[in-house]
Length: 409
Image (cartoon, rainbow, N blue to C red; front, side, top):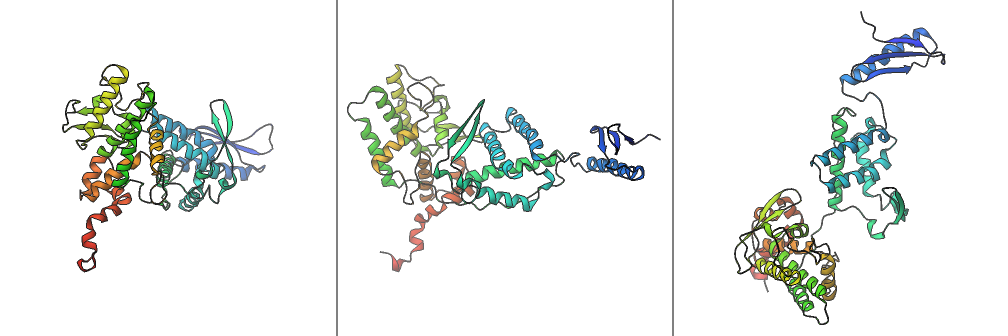
């Protein structure tokens, strides 16, 4: 019969110790914290079979706290990033959430401490971190960038309840962590928790008369006197970009990623029905723009030809800067026009951005009576998102049904 474990004394300790080896974890030596041999024999059996039971039930052998566990999780995220199973943006968001919030709250705890109640408490704490929590009195935060460590002031406008997109990202990071802890034996069962309340509101779009005011000002800016060639280039670019966004409903990031080779059936010589191969944030799709978008593309084609002295190549970005790179300052150019027209915010005081053109497109399609499923498919989103953020706008088309004939003006 083989010996399962050995009880022994070390020369430098009066207490008894136990030693054994398990294939899954290797050699274990542990103090039994007693000078009595009979007690030591009982404790040795308990320690040995305790380790065996943990292995059998896929529980962690050592009760490491999160300070020791988290580097392994970070390595897992890094591996998923390298395998392209996680985007760089999502990787950065997950890591920031774990390092900034999760570790501040749980760093001295072990994974076994996690349960539904504790995670719900943590989520509530995180949601109120900048309002009533630890962040309320903070004025600066420490930034680690390579070998540099420096302080950065925390703007007051950041101390708010997290947005719906931030909460979704935080929730995704928590699900990723809990799944990893379960799959690696740190917790026995998957844990569920309550999703935090999301403050949803209508997206800031435009009304038709506001769009007309904005586009008239953008066109007027092009003809201003004393513009140098680069300034005129930028003003034509934002005018064409704004028109293109209004006529396609693309996300700004999708439009700015477009190259000329992503257009199918478009010609610079005449208006035509054409398609756009969109490289979206989750998957690619084909977009069907309004034909008027072709004029905006023709403007960019002529602008490129006039500035660079030749027509663009298929690999050139459609909305490129004067350095022939993807434009990264369209919001700056747009904000100048919004300021001149007094359209910086919508009726609720919510600031507009280039995303507002997409919201205008979706709202207009709903008001024309187009089915939400078709809009969602065309815009690369879901029907739930359409209903969540835009469905209130579609009431306009039912005005005659909502107001009885006897009460209409």
